[in-house]
Amino acid sequence: MIKKFLEKLHNFRLLPVFVIVSMVIGIVIGKWYGISNFELTPPIDAIKSIFHGTYEFSISNTLALGVIVGLFMMMYPAMANIKFEDLGKATRSPKQLLIVVFFNYAVAPFFMLLLAKIFLSGEPDLYTGLVLYGLAPCIAMVIVFTYLSAGNGPLAIILVALNSIIQMMLIPVYAKLLLGDVRFDVWVVGESVLLYLGIPLIAGMLTRFLGVKRFGEKWFHKLKFYLDTLSIIGLLFTLIVMFALKGDLILEKPMLIVQMAIPMTIFFWIMFVVVYLVGWKLGLNYKDAVAVGFNSTGRDFEIAIAIAITAFNPTVALATVIGPLIEVPVMLVLVWFAKKTEHKFFSGKE
Image (cartoon, rainbow, N blue to C red):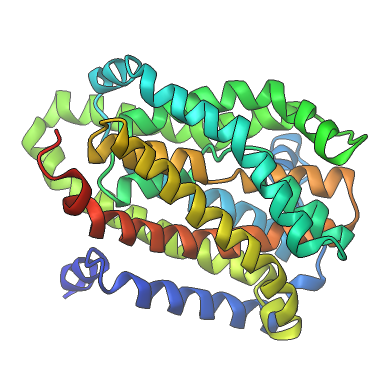
């Protein structure tokens, strides 16, 4: 009976139902406990407090750890499914790397700035929050979206690693260029890379290497079902945590959500579709086009939230927190769009 329920989680047609239910549960929890009244705790700060022995049990601290747990549950299975030799092949993809670098650093920040000017010029805090959200490409969840859409996982990891290195150097430059004199600890970028990418990658690759070595490839193939299930459960758990964190604002200030949702939805759809079709036009296969599309579209909400909390006022921080509430559902729709259009654009391409 449990396995039948788990199999339903794998049914992509039912996933929207589970997503909506998770969002509602999060909103109810947030409303019930009044979580939006609590001070935000960046997940990295919560981890540091544990190592320093200063961790205090509170709802905000627990939710911060919940984000980390949920992202690990999502990332770890995707990493465990990667073969080490495939990573080597992915590094020899100059066309894919150039597409992602161009769209992430020459297009995305300025496109988000344009949308902020069009839709939020009269709301300075929301404007700042939206521009912050567009500064850096995602270094975690894009791997999961690539994974869910049956894209090239090893390529996605290489692209994320490349983005991690570049954004450590360019985020301060873009922040000053687009927002003026912004001061924040640039090492927060490196810490995010280690926490959200490094740890799941090491754990996943060790699982595959040791598991296959001891039990064989057939055993790992059976394990894959449960790993895939864990990834989906992690996605739903992360949604519950994120919507509990600030989801009650949907009920209290629905127009705030709408103000952010319109430009962000436009950004995600246009960026993904354009890059996805550019990949198609340039002769990429479906798996690579999907990996390139999501790596050029997803934004690093962890970095945006961390910068907003440390360098701006609470309203700006709130605007960045709203970001993933919009991004995750929209990106899931884009996963559906990619899978629906695979045979239309990429039939016959290997």
